[in-house]
Length: 293
Image (spheres, rainbow, N blue to C red):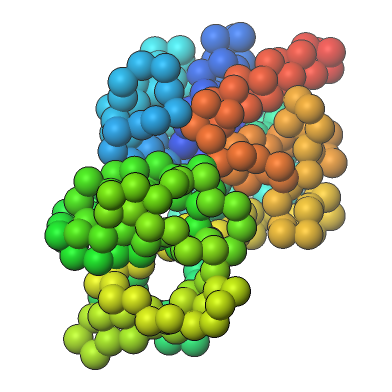
């Protein structure tokens, strides 16, 4: 069998993936970090960040993490991974027909876009449904908007929208961390209907007291997010929600295969956690490959 081209391939160049790649390269591993879009992942779409010690906005931190990876010797590549095979060495295939092999793999692909699960949802994509406050928030300055969800990313997005929207309503059927204040209101419920002819105009929300119609020119969706791991083999252990099950070091159920960030089971959707995940898994990869040498 031919020797693998790389010691490690990291699939996904968000904060978790770039941190893993940088840590691995600094440990002397030949590392490729692949992403189907630009490096940075979710960071590209975030404004001022709350979950970091220093004042950063998303694009600037994405650039910093990418620079750190490049300086460390990480090869940054582009391509959508469509298949993973082997068991160490591993082989990945991309939508462009490229094949790369490595002794170990770190999956850092994050989450697919959120979904409300409504039959007419697709009709409002780009016409009131959004997944990026930094990108689309200014379009709705002074208007009523809704954030669906209250996880880590949703809280960060709501913070940005609160300074733009005329009224911001956060709708979530679980625990909502953000408190009512000024133009920000909370409803413990779920969106059951989208209404509007020329773009979104209102949503119907169901809570413990029944249903109510809220004026809304936009809904920023952060619920119904599935792990972006469709290309992984069915034999890999997953949670009930499809997230990759890992141990404390990020190791999945297959040898020399790791998962970090939001794609793994139990992730808190926290930027600081994602970065720590990547570093910890890379250290485990370096130790595992050293033992195999």
